[in-house]
Structure formats: C-alpha cells, structure tokens
Length: 293
Image 1: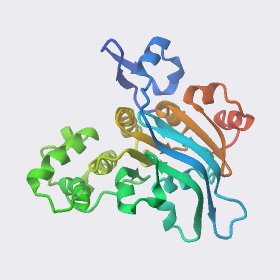
Image 2: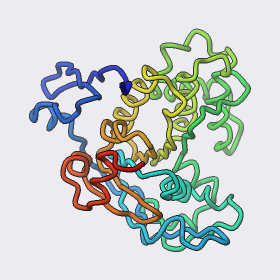
Image 3: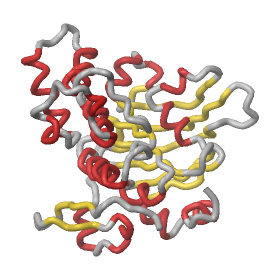
Image 4: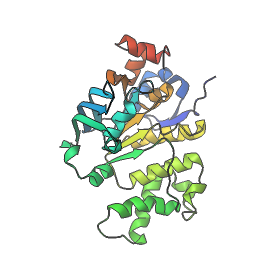
C-alpha cells in the first residue's frame, strides 16, 4: 500500500483550519478549494523555445519547450526517467552548462532579462536550487545559513547583521523553533528532514525570486515529506517555485500547474486537477493512470 504524508493543515477563508488528506486532494469541498487557490503574481521566468542537446546524442534531451513560471505558483514537472525534466530544471539557473558537451538553444528570461546576459553569481542568487539529497556544509547551523549571506555581501557582515537574517531564513523554512537554542550545533547532526529544511533556509537567505527543487523529498520519510510539502505551499506566496518529482501524488498535492514531459518533449501543460482528471493527450492519460513510468 502506498504511503502518504500525514494530512496537511491549512487555513480556510474563514480563518479556521482545514485538514486536507494528501491521498484524496480531489475530495476537497469546492468552497475550501477556492479559498486555497493561489493568487498568481508576475511572471518570474519565461522558458521560451528551449532545447538542450548533449554531444553525441541522437535526439535533444529537451526539445522546444515553452513555459511560464509565475510568482505565487508551484509548477510541477513530471514524466518518466530520462524525459528531460531535470535537465530543463538545471538550465533555469544555467547549471546545465557545467555538464560537458551540453548546449542550449532558445531563451530563458528572468523578470524579462535574458539569463545568458546575467552574471552567474547574481543569477543563482535570484534563482536558488534545492537538490535531491540534503547537502548542508560541515559547519554549524548558523554558519550554513550565514554562508550564503556572506557570499553575496560586498563587505563581510558582522554577527549583529547576520543574526536577524539567519533567524528570518530559518523561520521561513519552518526550522527556527527546532534549532533556535542550538545554532552552534553541527548541521550534519540534524535529521534528514531538518537538513533539507536547512538547505531551504540557506537558499532563502539570499532572498531569491525563484526556487528550483529537484526531487526535494526523495530521500525523506513520509512525515518529513509532509512538512516540506506544507512549506512549499507557504513559500509560494512570495516565490515562484518549480519542482521536479517522480511522485505523481506529490505533484498533485503541491502543484498549481503541471507540465508532463516525454522524451524531451512537452506533451501537456495544464492546471493540476485538469491534467490529472481530464488530460487532453492520450500519452498524458496513460502516464497519470500508471500505464508506464
């Protein structure tokens, strides 16, 4: 039997908490569903005709993909292994350039600016990334978060400047109450779920516009997964979020829009419930119904 994270508590339009069963998101009553609907802000990223080729490959890993990414939205990228979703994700902050033999065509715009024209450090401050495996630095909890702030500062800030920003980032990542009294503890002694939220705090410390998440819960237990998913819902109010996941139930729980990719092609892009309940493409229907994976 599939395991699901515990029910997610959210606040309804009347201010009262509602419990949403992650295993049956479609069962949310319509008035509550409307109250939970996100309010989209400006388009933060525009993926415009992007193709990515690897040297020696017969077919592009990503083929002519165009997608919007808006503030207030979680865009979930789904598809079978090798479909190009992680390659596409890594292109959004130009990490794909680190892969030998990789080339990209098309444009990626960040707040209207071509990312190819942005200094790489500046780009990666504005478009932060969370990876599959938590990767805290071998230093204290405080210094993990402070590191990102120090790296972007023109002058090395003192602890009086760092402390409130570290606290703010840890609060946004839902970790402050668990570590506030022990900020000098080595980060590697945290649990896996706490380590992943610490990495999220580190990413948030530089106040990005976009958060990229590559299978952020794949190494976590169901309880930690539920905590991270609820955090994603909270963060979307101030960020644009793109998440790659193989877990269709997770895509359905956290995504506002879903893009289904297959063999490098964007097969379908739609609001989440529409894609899962009434897909336009036969291949999409087969995939979400489990005919292949």
